[in-house]
Length: 166
Image 1 (cartoon, rainbow, N blue to C red):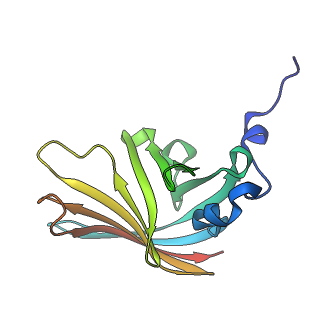
Image 2: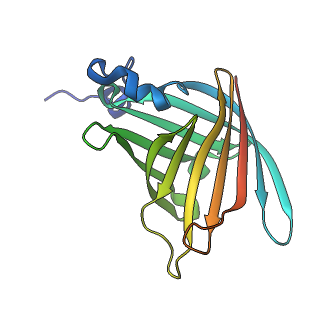
């Protein structure tokens, strides 16, 4: 067996033809984006800039990204793998940033003009989390990280990112 580069094997040139329209939900983000991020907590508001790069993977059945803050070393980068499930008409999503111990599993769907991703394993005590892509345009979008402490009756914004195509 010959040696092959795993990144070359992951990469795809475009969407999987049989459900190309459905996978464009995330496929429209393929490319590079400049990001302005804001975190809100009870003590302070923090801001930073970064980059977010999206690419087709796994024969065009998935979209993977790499997200990082300006000046961050590669061991601080995070990645999300999103794969479309035609039987559920939903996306299986895994975000990981090993340096900070973050491993999050979500399911995503289109809801109106937005993409809503809900965390599959809520925190003990009933706290729910969702991530949303909103205000989606060809050259920009807004990403929101929200938490609910009452089972989803109300939501609190804890992080947002505004992205512009690079």
